[in-house]
Length: 249
Image 1 (cartoon, helix red, strand yellow):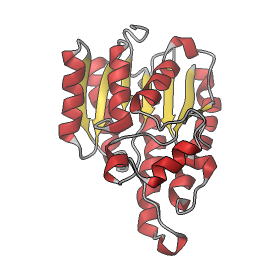
Image 2 (tube, one colour):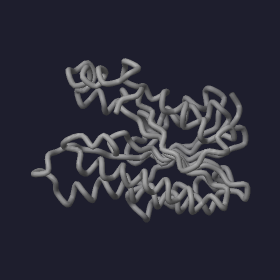
Image 3 (cartoon, one colour):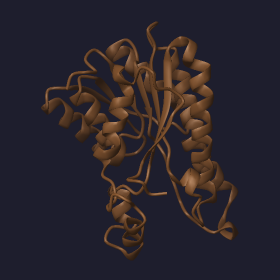
């Protein structure tokens, strides 16, 4: 599966869940991976160890994409370790659900700073390290951007912004042969999904009923699509928003 041999990938928010599996998948296909984390150092180091034990290359770098003063640390480490960046996966994200009566300016800022600001600023830092032949940016959004479920006004707005950013940057960076796409997952079983009490709940059962493929997703379901978009087989794909949701909408 070495279609990413010689490539360098940065995955933000990769200490657990979807991001961790994306990092493992890209490494399994030959990429050297920068595993970024904000607070989950132990998780990030485990991902790095998993990659190395499987024969791959990876480093862990702590920095919050919500903090403009820290984002540069990620890419300085990538340059020092590997000399360039070919693939950026903007996976770091936060969420919380509440009715409009409970919306606060602090929560608006928290989600937008990570989900939107982090995506923009990480991409800004990365593009200067892409080689002349270009590369790939993959943004992790959510089907919530189009589903717009109740109590998700902030989160859905951030992911709607990610969709728009994806299409803007695809046009802006296309002349530099940098492809920009988004993968928008539906329900995916992760640590956060489980700790929130969704797994095996009536809410989960209702989502499964609305999913044509009859199940919720796994991190690997998303990671495989990201790996495809990162590789040369997707060389004619940019500005696309790809649902990874089993038809859930």
